[in-house]
Length: 313
Image 1 (tube, rainbow, N blue to C red):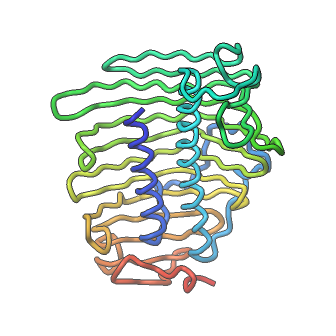
Image 2: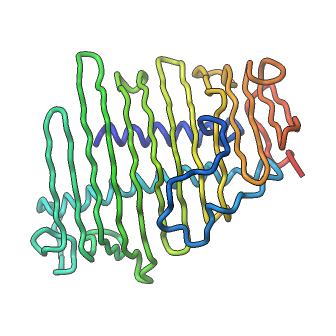
């Protein structure tokens, strides 16, 4: 799972760094057509309610929600590691028949490892995660399936994660659910030379009253030396936002390390209204950054720092 962890780290940097530091929000095709993959959780029909976009600050939550989604994936990997550690007999501590252990009969772990494949499956049956800081009870299934084709100078990979987990968290037993599938494919030569695409028809998270989902996601990114690119498309749904936003990059973001702005690119965040960020040669002035709110330029900067509090109504 080392490649998968690398993908998560790269996406957190790409998404949170581009959306917040550069002053925009992004996604892949520029289309605002509704996602078609059905959602299984969505407690408040948030997928049917566009978020009001009246000022640039309205989509700050998009960055936080994306980072939270990626954080949940990392959390899942941490839980899987902890469960594997206990079932291998490390740091066993005090456990009861309720804890997720193969010997207790409430957990099944299947693995298959080779030079070209990593396969891990967990099946939970109403069990507590041993060693977790607060009561975490799980039922359901998690599968990680990765194939790797190492060559002399690079590794080509394809990874599928399938998650259908329900349960509760904390002494107050907040309902917890994580449902969806993600796909990743790409090539890694080293930490400064890689390309990959992450996609998902739907990925949903529910903890207590907090709901977060990504639909019809496609995130492509690459780095080669000091050259970096980002191409995104997604529908982001959040109970915190009270609805959904569509994110897109009609023009791929391209930037060089150390430069104050991307060389070019166009990012769009749309709900009930639209905010756009146009960079470098994609801006109306051929350099810097321009921010448009519902089709009208409201801010231009020679650099890519924008004080969102001064934009909009």
